[in-house]
Length: 352
Image 1 (cartoon, helix red, strand yellow):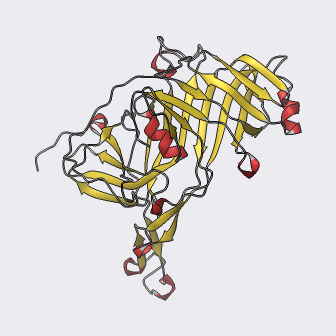
Image 2 (image 1 turned 90 degrees about the vertical axis):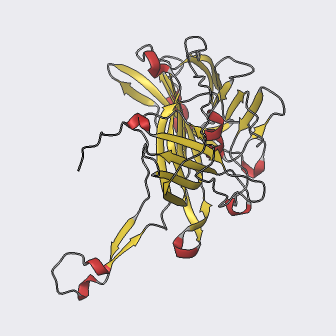
Image 3 (image 1 turned 180 degrees about the horizontal axis):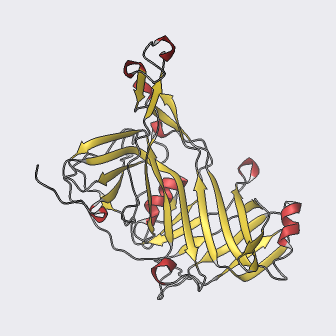
């Protein structure tokens, strides 16, 4: 057999395309011939995770030793949710798709630049009845005819991180994101024959358009404006699980229990030291505003209305005393009004 060259990780690519809500997006899977939008994920950072379960049974009846017996092993490749993890730099052109995959709710402006306001849906969502937002994720493995499609996908985990410390240099200062796309079905050996689009690549926190290393933070009655911070992260988990099993155990809907946090590294000093007592008192904690200073196209704002400090903020940072503010983002009781968690403006009409 002739030797064949090894395949570079950067020959792989991931594409996204929303499933149509024209009738019902559930199982309206994009075809292998669709024109997927290329995502700027880290090379080698994504794998297809089919979550197959191998389970032995009735082995007490065997007389052939202690090992599992071939005919008494069930292979369950249907029940578990399938995943494609990723990491990479955020871009203005692709961030909205990820925020939709996370929040499952958006209020989009009618004219350019299209302001998109994100907070979690107030109601329990029924994806099988066209609620929420689903994507098909295409994984080009670098070999023709071996493409993978993940269907009915949303984000089961997601984070957006901003580094402002002067100890973080070069490209590592760009805003980064990571997460997992999860869906109820994964197909293999697809020929991804569509003409994939490659969006523009406008990064956040560049030298020309940096995040100022300050934010406005209020805990209890103490409001600090222009508080310096070293690192800021939005973190989301979903508790995503399959529900209402269809034929063979395939999920016919989802259980979704979103939780979100802001994690903020700040200096320990006289005006932040009282946060320890405020954590013990259970005071309301909110980020009034963290933004990149743009009012129109390219705007990115983080904030929350209600929350609690989740952990003791007093930390040791190497040779220094530091503080990590972990805010559990919460919704108000009895459907009272609450503000957006993330706002983005771009030149793309998502028609959400």
